[in-house]
Length: 436
Ligand code: URA
Ligand code: CA
Image 1 (cartoon, rainbow, N blue to C red):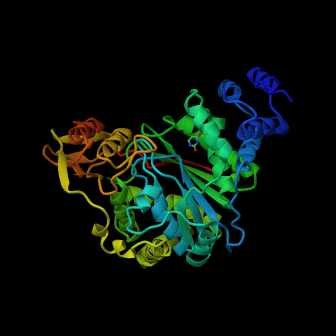
Image 2: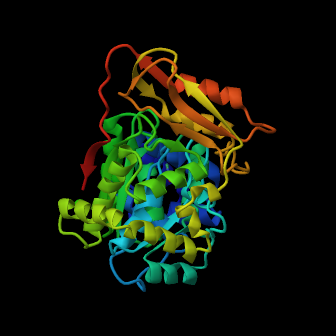
Image 3: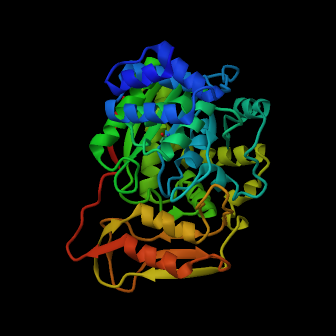
């Protein structure tokens, strides 16, 4: 098989066979096929697309390119969740203990933050002592015993995707639906869960800016899941503004604790309940969405969700007293209030700008090597549609002034992120569509 013939076939709009896709992915992973040939193929895919069958074959080939988690020793239906990346998106910290408290085991591998979006693994490290690195045995044992574990992506999961994603990043081929869908789903399949709930973000702060594109991506991912026998549901949720009210690592853990304890802002709580309800139904612990929601609300109200979070923290070596006293996590020496300049209604809260502002304070990474400050970030007081008076606080900024910390640049970004209009503004929906 000649690689150049496969590039040409795709360039001319043809459909590659399973064997041809295997040739490309195996050859690339082993180093036998060079970057420039895979770049040309990725660009051909960008313009020509892939059939559902090709996309499923590509996904499975990438899933098999490295280690695959075998979760079969854990009793029950294991359900994973994945978000395409948002700001103030703390749902994993809520859903892992919440679902475990309702009887669905969650064995989750998560990532670190990069750029304007945060990462679950960084957030968990704000809890003193919390270990995100676990051996496979420790991980499986914890999920069996406690019902939930959240750890960092282990060594050699989907090396083909790692290499291909890096190449796409520098060859303008990231934004292809079959390539994104297969990239995400290959990692989920290798992670071993029986069923998958996807949170596909849509709007200004998301990868996919339009609802139409978001639905296409969701359909592609659900199609792959169905094709390979992992039941998959995709919920399309808003990233027109940050999901929760906190941006920054310890601040987001604190907000997750509030939601698990029955407090917290309605938006993060509502999206968590929607995603969680699908997880509970897929996990076989509720017969419909209504029953699922009631069951999850009961776990929050009777305190079992919060107790499960403590158990999970202790199992991973962390100090669970942060649940009762979040001030035991890293904090900030200084706070600054960013205030509204005029009366009116909030008409936009740009998630990306706020994510970047938090990054300037040290909450996020500009590059993979950046060191982050777990205690800093932002707390929002106003969302789209909220009425506001001149002089009222829009955002409280938490900072630890020091080298490289750009307080005034962050403040400027926050001002730019908010628009206040004279006329009343309707609150945008939190959930736009569900693809099953
Ligand atoms: N996230 C991924 O994991 N892969 C992509 O291709 C895009 C976003
Ligand atoms: Ca289905």
